[in-house]
Amino acid sequence: MKTAIDKTGRAASQLLGDPHRATRAAEMVKALGHPLRLQIVALLCSGAQHVSAIAQRLDCPQAILSQQLRILRVREVVRVTRANGFSYYRLAQPGLKNFVRCIAGCSCN
Image (cartoon, rainbow, N blue to C red):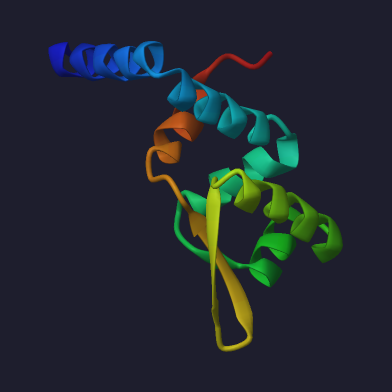
């Protein structure tokens, strides 16, 4: 338990001591503030996916999905690689898995 508290304290100190870092973190949180984008990130927690698979899994038209992925890319939430004619998206920040776990664990009544 002490380790988790120590990590939280260090993370908080990093944000408090670095306004630029706090601004970047706030921009990332804003990017995750849309339900579809949050679902995309949650899906990518399990690994890289190509656009068609994401669209099918989330039952979302590919055009809309592409718009949302662009926002996540610009905010450096996801990264894209291209292979075999597909664009594969993955999380740019592994720590986002903890964010998704935290959000999913919150009481959202």
